Length: 241
Image (cartoon, rainbow, N blue to C red; front, side, top):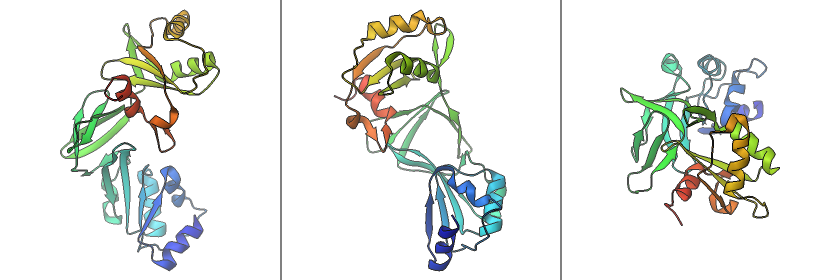
């Protein structure tokens, strides 16, 4: 990190993209202070407010931009923080909204799409708008089966053990409270009925079931380095061939 800081200082680099939580490392006392007042820092997972204060105190960046978005639609909202606005900063608070995006917000998920398109992406995050400010409140991880709330991650652990592979993706549909499974290994010998029967033999999941199972080519639904949940959900809903 110190090499990058020095490069920003000496070369007057205007923008430095720092992935995920690596920006928090700049707040550590083990990193020597370095004046990068010509450089704006851009991240996708903002630091805590205390870390933000330390970064500005130690390194004096021009600004820090925290981005919220998804692979399928790109950046949806941004916060811009400067030294004199740190008191307004929160890692889950965004004041600059992408004007090219339409939104529909529900209690357990939201929909978003480009205004020029009709293809809504369903995102399993809990968000809200208040006085023109966008807030991220967390990621939904729960489906309800016969009034029993079950974490999707718990079912995923069971499936991984049952299939003896991680070549699959669970696809929750938070709008209709359904669960699908995409399997990426066509050599796996399983069916929807077999999977549901064995799942329901487990006491914890006796009310759970998959609505659909399909074998899908991983390359057809990968966005970046991982399967795209919105693309998979559209597939299972029959929106795409």
